[in-house]
Length: 182
Image (cartoon, rainbow, N blue to C red; front, side, top):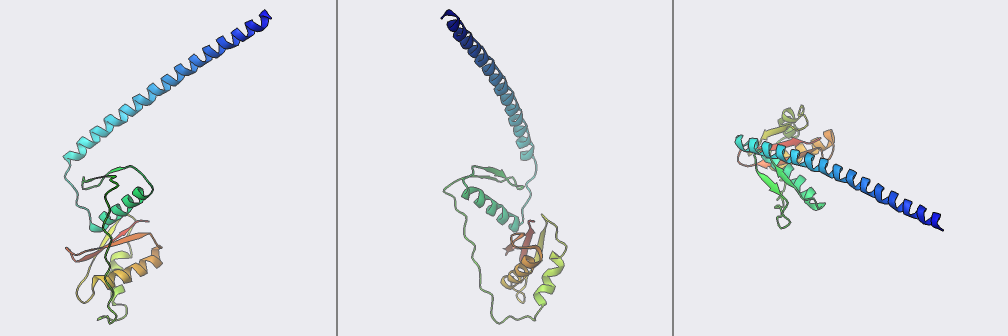
């Protein structure tokens, strides 16, 4: 009987010693993680200070729309985020904020241009467009932005695939902006 009690006591002592060692290892691991996290936070603060000293970069409208789409996607899947754009504007997850829906205008049925005029107008701007680049295609009254955007979108979907670009109309500069995403 005494031997059995000694074995049980020895097992309890071993378990206690093993648990203490495991707790010490976990504490050391937590300390290392805390150290690494503090280092990362210090680097972020340093980067944030450097970013504030730079001049803001103006973003093309098409880039702003691409960023809005990305933020809407993050919001839809429930992410909490803080994004600092190249123009140093911060976007922070706010569940009450809803982006405005795009309004599309109808393409006129009787177009004042000949077959191929639209393609010949936008093709030089987009044919060598690399991923991440923005093409700014000017539009006029003879080549309205709605028709130009529709024609360019059809061509680019066929050439690059759906979802590989995004478009926006910048009415201030009278340009159709196309951002190639993939």
